[in-house]
Image (cartoon, rainbow, N blue to C red):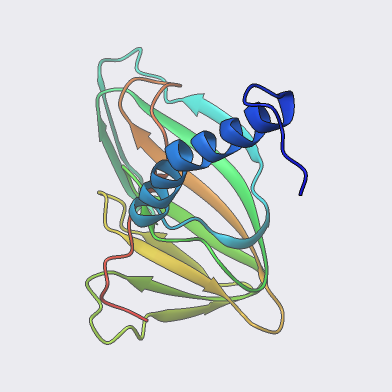
Length: 177
């Protein structure tokens, strides 16, 4: 049998690995318990981010003749993102601080909110648009197992411009499979 002296470099490396695993394992496991990262998210680049003009005051109120109404209180950013999720992938459980305007460009997805105890959700196909409720309502979106999905999303992000995040990771609420 081959024994190493008590202070050999090899024994020191082994001890460092054991200590690192012992220290990092609980942190990694805790992170996994608190966040549900996406699966097969191929890309999610932000194409633009800008702050709504508040020169007229801190609030923006638009009532168009066509019936569209937009009202913000305080600084609000708009963020545009393209999200590509491969077949069978998902976004992970998350929410947003404000509403999100979404258009499905390719494929299809099933959007399920945590308060949907039947876990049925709503299916959106290419060409469909919808408004994600925002206001930190936890949800998950599953891409079609056959085609995947490409989404274009525009987020209304209330808060300090350019510093507020537009996605809030959330733990699995345990209401769906």
